[in-house]
Image 1: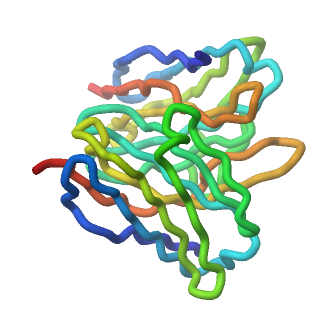
Image 2: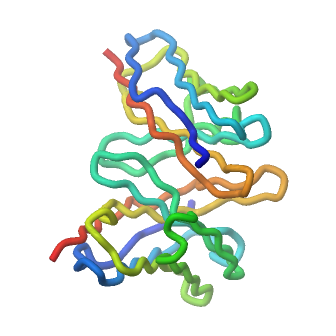
Length: 107
Length: 121
């Protein structure tokens, strides 16, 4: 079955740039969306349609996609960015799915 | 600003039916798609499916035989029924608004806070 693959965890020092990847065979033809989920809270959309940022999301969050891999970049990570990050897309039959999630530690 | 709120029993017995309702405010339930997503304790997000304002549904294949979503446009809420539950269905269940377009597909954008449903006798 189709999967979106993310690294389980990444760590970054405050002020450094962090990149979280999401890979999937259908991504060349499908948009990717990124969500931030802090402990005990509902997910929040931080990137839509590969690279667009919703209003209210800090400019340090950006997204890109090339081939079978999409990337969420946090430029100058802040302590408050520590969270789980999930990518979302659809497969070729239109079924939605999330990646397994990446735990970002900022220390 | 759309707001969504899940409601329903926090405890369901094995083999029974899990029923949840999501109440929508700040947006018209008649003009968007609506979804359910769940998250097992300590686990990742899992897409369950969506229902359109006209009642069209799209379910996760592995749950399709047990899932029913419905929408009540006159009362601004939509619902999830999951039959024959087991302990594996224990999760936080989120409802969310879905943005849909023929050109760019669909995605959940605004979420409820989630409600924990435990399956246990």
